[in-house]
Amino acid sequence: MNTKNTERNMIRMANFIIGALVGLVLGFLIAYRTVTEMLNELDENDKEENTNGTESKSDKPRPWRIGVDCDNVINNLVESIIDVYNKDYNDNLSVADITTYNMRQFFKNVSQDKFYDYFTDKRVWDNIKVLENCVATLKKYHDLGCEIYIVTATAPQNISNKAAWLQEQLPFLNMYDSLIAIKNKQMLGGDIDILIDDCVDNLVGGYYHKILFDYPWNRLGFESYENNAHMLHQRYRCRNWNDIDKAINMIMQTDMGTEIELDLKPENIGNTENEQRIEFVVNDDKER
Image 1 (spheres, helix red, strand yellow):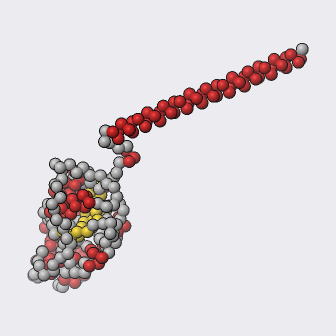
Image 2 (tube, helix red, strand yellow; image 1 turned 180 degrees about the horizontal axis):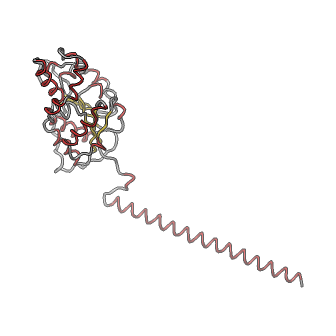
Image 3 (cartoon, helix red, strand yellow; image 1 turned 60 degrees about the vertical axis):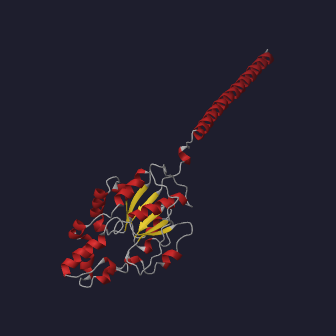
């Protein structure tokens, strides 16, 4: 009797185990089929997006990032300082007289402390002007989808005033996001694609395309600028914002570095096939 009960119990246990194993196998097969169908559906969606000329979000290249110095690139700071200085000391200093970037030495009638006060002098900023075609050019590339950053070595005490001035002049930008105060601009290498500056030292050694805004103070010794530019990055010397616009166009059409995105529709940007490269070599015998 006990033997028969034991056999029946063993049969029940075996049936239970077999049933459980069959359930696990069926559950695994159902889950596998569900996951496979989901993956196939995602793959079909990706193929359909690629067929329609679109890319998945993770593969989308980032926009162009253009860094722009503020003083003497967006505005005429040195010219405005000279005007106020000449009135204060009855001098006749001009922009053409400033032949080195360390310009303190040319303001002979003023002490060092007083000279640096001019950079925050209300009279200077009341008289300061935005350079011609600057706003239109920056807005053009902003509307094309570029990220525009104002990169300046401003003293901490002047940041708020300069930010307010820039916000007024460039209302399509948000200075909370777009203003970068930094002295060593080479630290931005790899994060910006183009830097526009009037100081050669901010361009040499930087891992970005270089546009030097031409002034008397950056014409001497510019061989270091030529010889130390990274071979993957283009460099230009431009005399105005029309030249800068052409240089940016050329860089974007022929970039050799990071894959970046720009809406180069005919209605948004001019044809540059017949444009000449803007050379940075300067004839110092000619007034520019």
